[in-house]
Image (cartoon, rainbow, N blue to C red):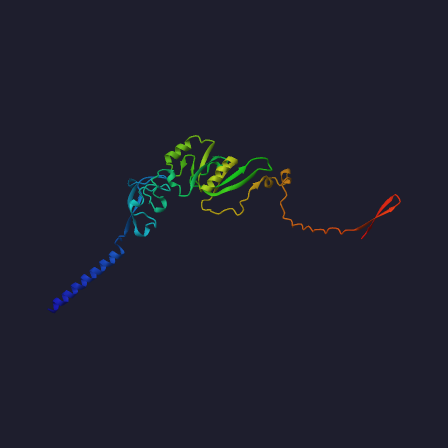
Length: 284
């Protein structure tokens, strides 16, 4: 009886040791199964302005710790919403990449509420030699022609986003972009800018008053010029006749105080006649 008890204890110790070894092995060597979340991704390459349908979306599983903050889990959250930016196949679609449900397809759907799209004519010289591309950030410069003393250049718009160059948008496919590059580029094209209604009026007036040019800027630089004053010919020719004809600056002069004079006091006048002579004697 005593021998059976010792044998059972011995067998239990072996079983416990085996379980302990298996637990240690599984926790260190065995692959861990990480929890994943199903979210929506693009089923194909799509340009900006595409109105999303269920066929354009697919479900992908992402580790729970890697799920983007604005990830879309339900396809109904994205259906009938336009893309604000182009996406590639298998790229995650987030709420930041889609617009409101407007039912509008095409580039017009990517225009933010309260904004407008306006086109300005540019050439290689006024468009930074073709280096400006869709989604670039630019400043708009206006030059008023005329006599040297009247010519002026000023910045009428800062940090504007370019939606398109001609018909080339950010979502243009690689094949279409290559076809455009192979064709002869026209000497004059247009840049479509994303602006407010007030800025659109300013740009439209400038287009009809003089020449428009674009200045390319860093997309991460959103600063504004401290002194956006106009540049005139006087700054270009400081020692010429143009500069000498520069109107003198207006200096505020102190007001001139005019003192009122008292009216002269009346004087006593006596007429004196000496024969034919007439003399007036004045007495105070």
